Length: 106
Image 1: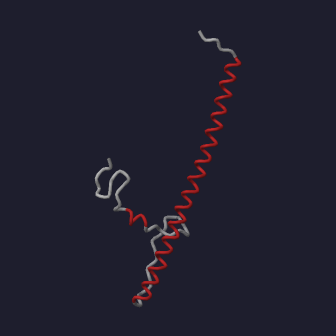
Image 2: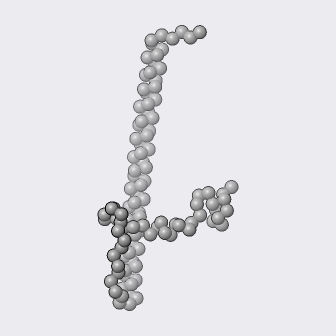
């Protein structure tokens, strides 16, 4: 039989509380790392879009005089952010589960 007393129960509660605190701290660190990574990706996306628009405009100016470019489509409520052209470039890329020939990865 088990011989449990209030001291054993209290010790178990303290261990569980300690584990919970450690898990919450790791969770907070991982969330911060993910937020930083997402911010970096969004910055890269914005810079790439601005670079592409700048050089596309420069190429159009040197090629021949053309009518003014149409306004870009609405950003869906994301004011100040340019749309990503990377999504279109990556649309035909193989997925992580496929190799370069479209075959499922082993």
